[in-house]
Length: 270
Length: 236
Image (cartoon, rainbow over all chains, first blue to last red; front, side, top):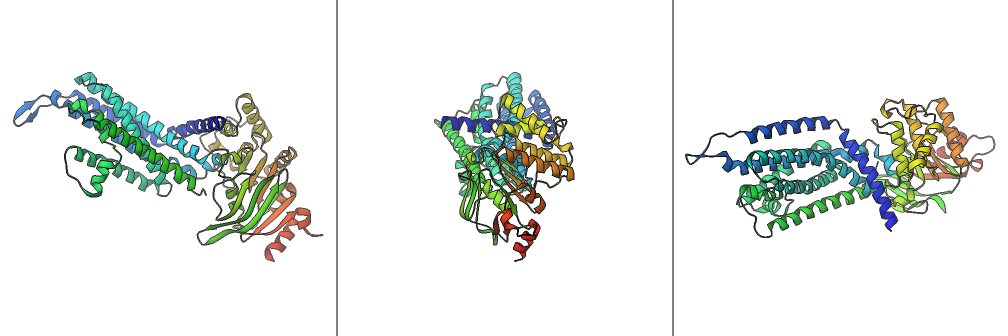
């Protein structure tokens, strides 16, 4: 049993390295790099400025708003990282199946589970590397320039990583039946839609029906990142809220990976 | 133990029946040519054997195991008809990946990769990117990956597709060499002359059924070629 597990792990490692290399060789990578650099220039410029802001006719120092500005910037970058993970996942498994290049690998003693998970790992490797650079740099700039604590950004990255597993897993599952463009559009709409719903409910909006259920029980894509930065906006979390969000994020990530594995095991490969 | 076995297998794609209650067995060490016109179900047989698809009825066994079990593919090598190789990989890098997945490591891996390159005439192309190779050379890379780790069972789907006459002759020789090592070989093809030269048994698939099977010497009547026997069986 232990020998079989070690063998499966070895195969997974080989395939995951190959899948990461495949992801890095994609034509979209230079575009991602350029967008990331532009985003960092934008964050650099935003975190350095101090415009005159008034509230009820009284001047407000930017330092009083910087926590909110930092939160919005970092959570937005986190959500873009999730969109990137989903967009990369929309063809990282489907394409080698469609063009036949997966056939030779799957004719080796490779389990379908190992193959699907390795492709997911390739997607996540590239997306989370980008996310780490974006979140880390923006967190550092807000911390260095405005004295915000840097540690919560680590929590945002963990929340982002769990969200990325959820989004990429579901996108990869959908890509087994849907065309790439449609899957990418679904990813874009879902990530920002769920993010906006969650934020609205968090700010006290009354949303019922399916949208309300998604906001309360769906994957906490934005909610867990906002919660991680609660100290930046001096709004402490309710008791047990962090744990509830972590469990919800973990449950969605697990369900998403399970859906991918089950769907791929049932798939007929042509 | 049979190297491969299909018992009472039916496979449908929607309304179309690709295989209809077929029985096919291949003993270890033997070689079988799977013959049939286009659309007869040859590739479907291979897909079922490799676990790419599941039968609607019947059982499929590869080396005595369910093909969905990865362990059934230990010692099995496959060359698909529609060969797609990673264009950006080098020939040697691609072979190293497949050798590793076949269970090789270290010096043994390097030795097997070099041996496969040598055998298929690619010794001086190891550092080349696959995307820069001609179709015939890419097909040789496909053969090279199939010969890694000295397989027990070789499944070849239209193996000479894309090869020039010299390549076809070489492929025939490579198959002869692996057969001499005791490897079981299944060749799916509609090039009857090729099958006649490399296999001792044949099964003729027609409209999803096994129309005839047995030793080639038994299928071919006196004065007939395998092509004559094939046409007789297919045309009734």
